[in-house]
Image 1 (cartoon, rainbow, N blue to C red):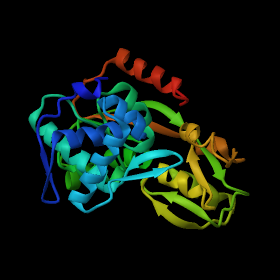
Image 2 (cartoon, rainbow, N blue to C red):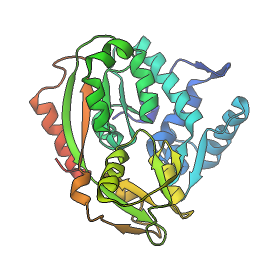
Image 3 (cartoon, one colour):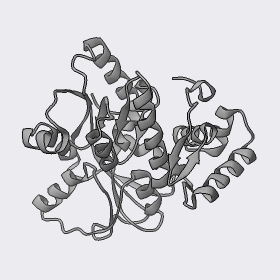
Length: 289
């Protein structure tokens, strides 16, 4: 992966009627990669105070909040991610490099094997896909693999084109809570494979209630501190192990297995050796392959 100062960010973009400069785009790229202002400032070879001042200036110019700080680190808000999506869309139109978009779970793998993937909620990924701006798509939810194999969906929403689907890894769900796990006080993550857990709960006769929904699992992790209970992808366990929370494996753990796939919209782009390398890297990250 290239260092931040080697990235080809030479063109400004327009967002909300304001010009975002190449240096400001680099700020967001660095923060998105590291989830730490200190680490991001090191990548850009500037002081942490200068990095923070520039971020706040960008927020003031746009009039929106572009980052959130928490014990889990500093992450981009929806507005911040939208700016990066616009940047990648522009870069896609002006570059011959392929463009990778992933959900948050598949993004853990994508950022180790692809250059500068954009990691976002799956509804945002689908928006980019329908615009024809995606070459490789990381899919966290097996439901969408089913939808993408449905010709009616392809013709109505995406247009009729060919693609290759690659199974890279498997994941499970664990239970995370501040105190006792409360099925009646769940935090849900939209466009995630949590639907698998909810279906299991219904079959098992376990009553549950989703009190709040978010698009980002890292925001959901922060909300556990406020008392919500969370079914979290096991591959993200490293983000909660150092927190003062309880981690349990549900009795139906094995039933929560779900596939993490990547889709190439250019046929024969990856050969068997490429896929084997991807799976090895996924295994090192804690995924099952």
